[in-house]
Length: 474
Image (tube, rainbow, N blue to C red; front, side, top):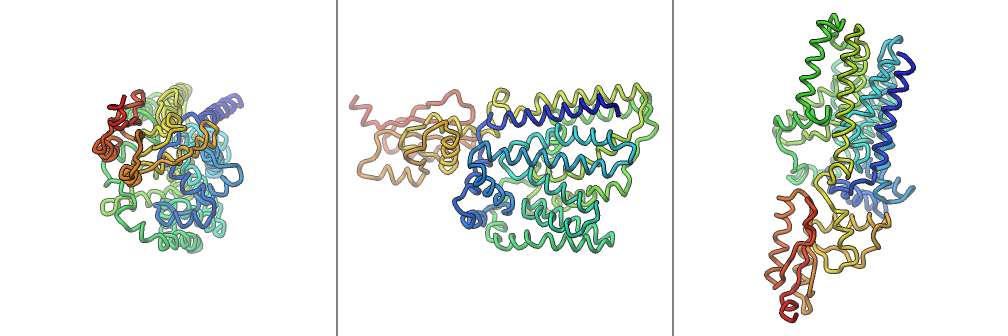
């Protein structure tokens, strides 16, 4: 591969990575990120562990985030910066894995292919600056497959334990790898994976009351076509089905005129050493179980990246094409990169999308800064949003916290109820209105008139409610 093409690939990867970094504070923290703040930015580690006992996820990521916050500060930027650093490290491990799996003479070409997939494709970019465990999970799983391929069972068992404690999909992957290696009679690696799974299994026992209740994962539905399409869209970006059709058309053109004499199927050894076979086994198991207890969620399938990226890099980088075929492949690659650069950053760029995951907590925090008597059905998230906005210096520390439904009820029953108050919520419009309606009914029954104050916001509501007694006196 010519040096000029290597420089182009490096420049592209740097452009995508730096653009993600520059957008680190472009959008407000959305609900899941605010929950990360509430779980991890605790005064003590024991408080964190106690809170996580009532949570869907294991403790490794939140423990790391707790330590990170105490080292560099607790703010929206530090929250997302940890994910960005993990995105970089995970991408580098995947590139090195592709090089290790490639033939000696083609390593540079396959490394370039892996770099484009690891640093520029929608799945890793989407989670590169999200205050959740996904980027860290990708890094840890990439290390799992690295040490498994390298033949170091002790290191493999250690990082397998970290994967299981980072996310339960990491645990499922480790158990699938243990089953696969056991079937292949690689007893040392099967044992290492099983030993590595023990800490996560112990955590499941510790948090069993919540994990095996109906509340855990209640937002996840049974597998359907939408799950497949959403997962495909996360991998390929906007218009996934047309892109699949374009790939099929490209293969036809390459077979007829591009010098591709045959489409090589991945070697069995490649599928095994890369970790793709255990990954596919995990997917089959998770989807099958999800028809009974739903747990298949498109976000969680990011755990497949460390196995898929090196295999795709080896397969694509190993294609022998003529000049016309290379030109056609380059055209398709440019089209993919253009779609990843534009629509691929929509959810991360406030100048493009304006809303992060249908939440606008930051704007409500700013508009209600300095106000008293604020109530919301999502009071915990608004209090966390105020805390993060104050940490960034965008608002002063609130003099009083947000209250919820019960706090509002008690306040209205006091001998000296407020003359005016504020109601707010944020989220998808139908759910937002449904959750805000009980609070609105309370204040209207107490003789308040409420007027909207944020008609320009698409995923947030802010109501200024004034007692009718004030209106009559005026």
